[in-house]
Image (cartoon, rainbow, N blue to C red; front, side, top):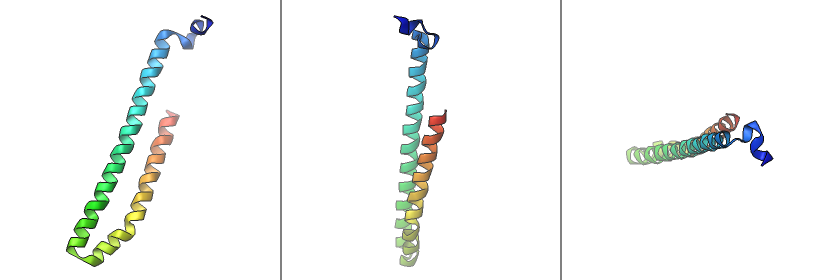
Length: 86
């Protein structure tokens, strides 16, 4: 019973914390999924258009694919770190 006597452990504070954390988790997950889908769709479309138009442009696009993947992972890690701080 002494657990609920503390100011930070009142039922209202606990429910507020749970709803806030659930909202933050939802935002992180949807943000990450959106970034992954956006980047992978952009890479696939760029490769298809480049290979249809000219194979040389397709090779250049294929060379930049690892760069796009790395920037996607960097963006995801930044979003995670900002969410942890808030």
